[in-house]
Amino acid sequence: MNNKQLYNLLKRYGITISALLILIITLSYIVIPSVRHINELSDQIFKERTKLEELYLKGQSLKRSTEEYRKIKNEISNLENIFIDPGEELSLITQLETLAQKTNVEQELNIIDTSADKMNIVLNLQGKYKNIINYLEQVEALDLYISFDRVRFSNTLQTNNKKTSQPNDPSNLTNPTIGLILNGQVNYWSNK
Image: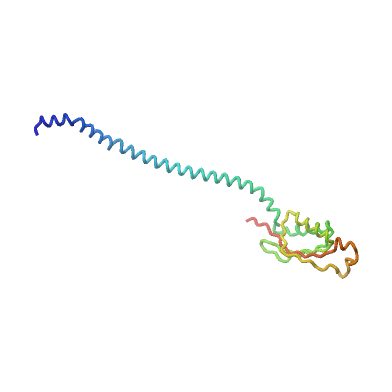
Protein backbone atom coordinates (compact mmCIF):
# COMPACT_ATOMS: atom_id res chain seq x y z
CA MET A 1 0.00 0.00 0.00
CA ASN A 2 1.48 3.22 -1.08
CA ASN A 3 0.96 6.73 0.02
CA LYS A 4 -1.69 7.49 -2.52
CA GLN A 5 -3.80 4.57 -1.45
CA LEU A 6 -3.32 5.51 2.16
CA TYR A 7 -4.31 9.05 1.35
CA ASN A 8 -7.48 7.90 -0.40
CA LEU A 9 -8.35 5.64 2.50
CA LEU A 10 -7.86 8.46 4.93
CA LYS A 11 -9.84 10.81 2.75
CA ARG A 12 -12.67 8.34 2.47
CA TYR A 13 -12.72 7.11 6.10
CA GLY A 14 -10.88 9.94 7.82
CA ILE A 15 -13.92 11.95 8.69
CA THR A 16 -15.64 8.87 10.10
CA ILE A 17 -12.57 7.86 12.11
CA SER A 18 -12.06 11.42 13.33
CA ALA A 19 -15.71 11.66 14.36
CA LEU A 20 -15.44 8.30 16.06
CA LEU A 21 -12.29 9.38 17.92
CA ILE A 22 -13.94 12.67 18.98
CA LEU A 23 -16.98 10.70 20.13
CA ILE A 24 -14.82 8.27 22.15
CA ILE A 25 -12.86 11.12 23.75
CA THR A 26 -16.06 13.03 24.49
CA LEU A 27 -17.68 9.95 26.03
CA SER A 28 -14.63 9.09 28.12
CA TYR A 29 -13.82 12.54 29.42
CA ILE A 30 -17.17 14.35 29.50
CA VAL A 31 -20.25 12.11 29.32
CA ILE A 32 -19.21 9.16 31.49
CA PRO A 33 -17.90 11.35 34.37
CA SER A 34 -21.07 13.46 34.10
CA VAL A 35 -23.27 10.36 34.28
CA ARG A 36 -21.29 9.13 37.31
CA HIS A 37 -21.66 12.54 38.96
CA ILE A 38 -25.42 12.60 38.19
CA ASN A 39 -25.80 9.11 39.72
CA GLU A 40 -23.90 10.20 42.82
CA LEU A 41 -26.10 13.30 43.13
CA SER A 42 -29.19 11.15 42.65
CA ASP A 43 -28.05 8.83 45.47
CA GLN A 44 -27.32 11.79 47.75
CA ILE A 45 -30.72 13.33 46.94
CA PHE A 46 -32.43 10.00 47.69
CA LYS A 47 -30.60 9.73 51.04
CA GLU A 48 -31.49 13.31 51.96
CA ARG A 49 -35.09 12.72 50.95
CA THR A 50 -35.22 9.60 53.14
CA LYS A 51 -33.74 11.56 56.07
CA LEU A 52 -36.26 14.36 55.56
CA GLU A 53 -39.15 11.88 55.46
CA GLU A 54 -37.92 10.30 58.70
CA LEU A 55 -37.60 13.73 60.31
CA TYR A 56 -41.07 14.64 59.07
CA LEU A 57 -42.54 11.46 60.54
CA LYS A 58 -40.71 12.07 63.82
CA GLY A 59 -42.02 15.63 63.82
CA GLN A 60 -45.56 14.40 63.22
CA SER A 61 -45.14 11.82 65.96
CA LEU A 62 -43.77 14.48 68.30
CA LYS A 63 -46.64 16.79 67.43
CA ARG A 64 -49.16 14.02 68.10
CA SER A 65 -47.41 13.09 71.36
CA THR A 66 -47.42 16.72 72.46
CA GLU A 67 -51.14 17.01 71.75
CA GLU A 68 -51.86 13.78 73.63
CA TYR A 69 -49.72 14.97 76.54
CA ARG A 70 -51.71 18.22 76.71
CA LYS A 71 -54.94 16.22 76.82
CA ILE A 72 -53.65 13.86 79.49
CA LYS A 73 -51.99 16.63 81.52
CA ASN A 74 -55.41 18.02 82.43
CA GLU A 75 -56.56 14.59 83.55
CA ILE A 76 -53.51 13.99 85.76
CA SER A 77 -54.76 16.47 88.34
CA ASN A 78 -58.06 14.56 88.43
CA LEU A 79 -56.17 11.32 89.03
CA GLU A 80 -54.13 12.91 91.80
CA ASN A 81 -57.39 13.68 93.63
CA ILE A 82 -58.58 10.07 93.75
CA PHE A 83 -55.51 8.92 95.65
CA ILE A 84 -54.49 9.85 99.15
CA ASP A 85 -51.09 11.36 99.81
CA PRO A 86 -48.96 9.59 102.40
CA GLY A 87 -49.50 11.34 105.72
CA GLU A 88 -52.98 12.59 104.73
CA GLU A 89 -54.86 9.71 106.37
CA LEU A 90 -56.45 12.09 108.90
CA SER A 91 -58.14 13.95 106.04
CA LEU A 92 -59.76 10.71 104.88
CA ILE A 93 -60.89 9.85 108.41
CA THR A 94 -62.34 13.33 108.86
CA GLN A 95 -64.22 13.14 105.55
CA LEU A 96 -65.72 9.76 106.43
CA GLU A 97 -66.69 10.87 109.95
CA THR A 98 -68.33 14.01 108.56
CA LEU A 99 -70.32 11.91 106.10
CA ALA A 100 -71.37 9.53 108.88
CA GLN A 101 -72.64 12.40 111.05
CA LYS A 102 -74.35 14.07 108.10
CA THR A 103 -76.20 10.87 107.12
CA ASN A 104 -76.95 9.79 110.72
CA VAL A 105 -74.90 6.58 110.52
CA GLU A 106 -72.77 5.14 113.31
CA GLN A 107 -69.33 4.45 111.93
CA GLU A 108 -66.28 2.70 113.27
CA LEU A 109 -63.20 3.01 111.06
CA ASN A 110 -60.25 0.68 111.53
CA ILE A 111 -57.00 0.99 109.62
CA ILE A 112 -55.80 -2.59 109.30
CA ASP A 113 -52.58 -2.25 107.40
CA THR A 114 -50.64 0.35 105.49
CA SER A 115 -48.02 -0.33 102.88
CA ALA A 116 -46.07 1.85 100.49
CA ASP A 117 -48.91 1.98 97.97
CA LYS A 118 -52.18 1.38 99.86
CA MET A 119 -54.00 1.57 103.18
CA ASN A 120 -56.40 -1.27 104.08
CA ILE A 121 -59.45 -0.16 106.04
CA VAL A 122 -62.53 -1.71 107.65
CA LEU A 123 -65.71 0.34 108.01
CA ASN A 124 -68.26 -0.93 110.52
CA LEU A 125 -71.53 0.90 109.86
CA GLN A 126 -74.83 0.81 111.73
CA GLY A 127 -77.97 2.74 111.03
CA LYS A 128 -81.22 2.82 109.18
CA TYR A 129 -81.18 1.25 105.74
CA LYS A 130 -81.90 4.52 103.90
CA ASN A 131 -79.22 6.36 105.89
CA ILE A 132 -76.59 3.73 105.09
CA ILE A 133 -77.52 3.84 101.39
CA ASN A 134 -77.23 7.64 101.50
CA TYR A 135 -73.84 7.32 103.26
CA LEU A 136 -72.57 4.87 100.62
CA GLU A 137 -73.73 7.15 97.80
CA GLN A 138 -71.85 10.05 99.37
CA VAL A 139 -68.70 7.93 99.81
CA GLU A 140 -68.98 7.02 96.15
CA ALA A 141 -69.28 10.72 95.23
CA LEU A 142 -66.02 11.62 97.02
CA ASP A 143 -63.09 12.65 94.85
CA LEU A 144 -61.13 9.99 96.68
CA TYR A 145 -61.32 6.46 95.30
CA ILE A 146 -61.99 3.79 97.91
CA SER A 147 -62.39 0.26 96.60
CA PHE A 148 -64.33 -2.18 98.74
CA ASP A 149 -63.63 -5.83 98.10
CA ARG A 150 -65.69 -7.43 100.86
CA VAL A 151 -69.12 -6.59 102.28
CA ARG A 152 -70.76 -8.32 105.27
CA PHE A 153 -74.02 -7.68 107.04
CA SER A 154 -73.93 -7.88 110.83
CA ASN A 155 -76.43 -8.40 113.64
CA THR A 156 -77.77 -5.00 114.74
CA LEU A 157 -80.24 -5.90 117.44
CA GLN A 158 -77.66 -5.33 120.16
CA THR A 159 -75.40 -2.30 120.24
CA ASN A 160 -73.53 -1.41 123.40
CA ASN A 161 -75.62 -3.99 125.30
CA LYS A 162 -78.98 -2.28 124.64
CA LYS A 163 -81.74 -2.79 122.11
CA THR A 164 -81.72 -0.23 119.31
CA SER A 165 -84.82 -1.35 117.49
CA GLN A 166 -88.15 -2.86 118.38
CA PRO A 167 -89.00 -5.97 116.33
CA ASN A 168 -92.71 -5.09 116.10
CA ASP A 169 -92.19 -1.42 115.09
CA PRO A 170 -93.76 -0.90 111.59
CA SER A 171 -91.03 1.57 110.55
CA ASN A 172 -88.51 -1.27 110.86
CA LEU A 173 -90.20 -3.03 107.96
CA THR A 174 -89.72 -0.15 105.49
CA ASN A 175 -86.48 1.27 106.87
CA PRO A 176 -84.82 -1.40 109.02
CA THR A 177 -81.73 -0.85 111.12
CA ILE A 178 -78.83 -2.77 109.62
CA GLY A 179 -75.16 -3.26 110.20
CA LEU A 180 -72.65 -3.36 107.41
CA ILE A 181 -68.95 -4.21 107.49
CA LEU A 182 -66.92 -3.06 104.48
CA ASN A 183 -63.34 -4.14 103.86
CA GLY A 184 -61.47 -2.05 101.34
CA GLN A 185 -58.42 -0.10 100.45
CA VAL A 186 -57.35 3.40 99.60
CA ASN A 187 -54.37 3.78 97.28
CA TYR A 188 -51.62 6.24 97.97
CA TRP A 189 -50.52 8.70 95.28
CA SER A 190 -47.07 7.75 94.05
CA ASN A 191 -45.30 10.58 92.23
CA LYS A 192 -42.65 8.35 90.67
